[in-house]
Image 1 (cartoon, protein in one colour):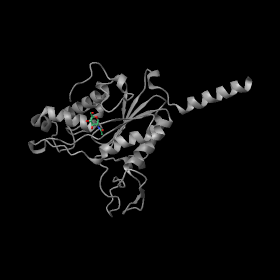
Image 2 (cartoon, rainbow, N blue to C red; image 1 turned 180 degrees about the horizontal axis):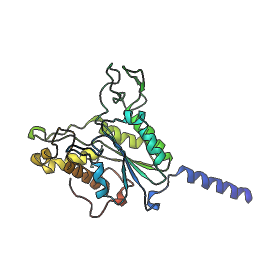
Image 3 (spheres, rainbow, N blue to C red; image 1 turned 90 degrees about the horizontal axis):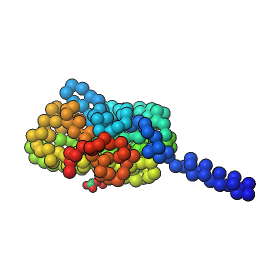
Image 4 (cartoon, rainbow, N blue to C red; image 1 turned 45 degrees about the vertical axis):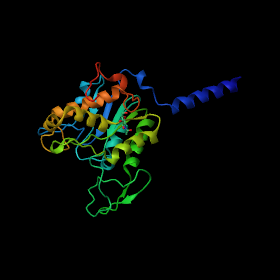
Length: 263
Ligand SMILES: *[C@@H]1O[C@H](CO)[C@@H](O)[C@H](O)[C@H]1NC(C)=O
């Protein structure tokens, strides 16, 4: 009897430690954001979408996005580690990279941001420093797994699109990192989910039209104005609210009524 009870207790303990805390059980999780300039707080007439997310969710948002970073450089600078140290069980981390992730690390002018091509265990060697360089998926999945191990839930988001109305003509070429981010969420499994922010914003831009969308890109085709950052945040909140690519832990925290900007 006693040994049966001991077994039961041990089994329960094992289950408990293997299961990340259900975020719904915490009233006050924090949302952390990890990404590049399109998500960061920027200046000089531009702004990313991260600063506007708290208008549409009921949770505090800590924006750790920073201009110019890729999955590789965010990792190498210890920025994921910093978030891993900060999160407590039940927190939510949104990760979005892609704008700075292309290029070749093998080149003599390796910029420290390009990932090794591929989506798996491929490795490259930096043509500049000799550093071993891994794939986009390697960096994202490593970070996501470490966060999930701390009880956080990770939302892997596809990157934002560029201005889809360049020269007044609508076009949308889906970068490879969109599918890579979706695959990363699948590979990590429990504790990870995916939002196709790229598609949501692209659909919103199709609706907004050339004149409006061009007004949201005052300097180049990548970086939005503050108003543009707000629109892009609304597309994210809507995608979360409708479970665009499956349910994420943020869904129950979208303020009502949820934005309705892309369909
Ligand atoms: C996300 O969902 C939307 C709506 O169903 C779909 O159009 C899009 O292709 C999905 N994204 C991915 C990467 O599967």
